[in-house]
Length: 341
Image (cartoon, rainbow, N blue to C red; front, side):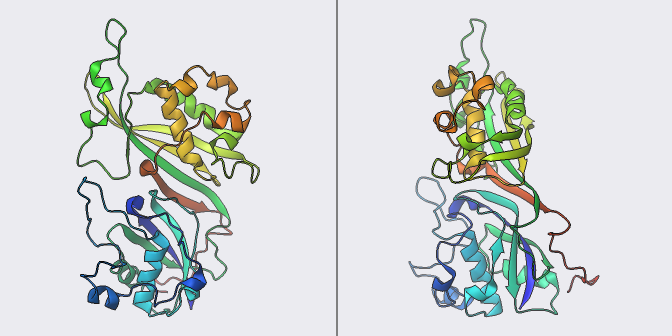
């Protein structure tokens, strides 16, 4: 078996997160569908493989998928390599993204029984067996000791939103269009990785919020309450930024924007809680409207401040990339010019 590093992208809408829900020893080739079982059971109601094309519910939403990204990735690899037991793949990944969260460059290390094979052939062979919303973006040989969870220099997450700006008329009342919700601006061609914010926002507050959240702080208030006291929550978030991607010229403009968060690591639901807090402040939600958050956020006890923090939905969150220091990048140096190892 030879060790490879995969860069994996996925639309997490239909999946229950990245990490497989079963233990390694509970999954063998007989419990995961291969290409043969898939082709022989196309009409079966118990068909396990996520569909190659979107399937839709009557309400217009995509059908959910009970699988995880790790499961369909291991299934595809086992189908191609004829590996009998999933444990022998020794698949390790960097970030355990939650249900509904997307990724552009998730890092995965896996053992494959192939050596003299061009990396583009490995990529093509795995991709041809993956569902439409998961793809291997790149493949390269890596050192046997490479662990995607170690020696991380930086992780970047983005969170994309679409909203209408809060605009007032001459008598200082909110314009009626600002109270019509997302159906007044949504588009069928909008990207899947997006949250339609249902409230008009005072986005002039976003630069101040980004400045407040950046740096080294006790982020306990933004960590899932079940994990809040499990470990020290003092972290350095080295970058918090909001970028305007597109803005219309309407009387009450519609904005597509993106939050960028960078740190060595994040805690459970932390990024979604940070975004949710920013949105609540910009919409003057009742639970933050009378709170002097600019002065009291970092001086209030995490449990007390956490009551005022509500998570944004998973739909807008995307793992953008993971960067490693030189000692942990895992790259093998013996790559031939034709792309084979």
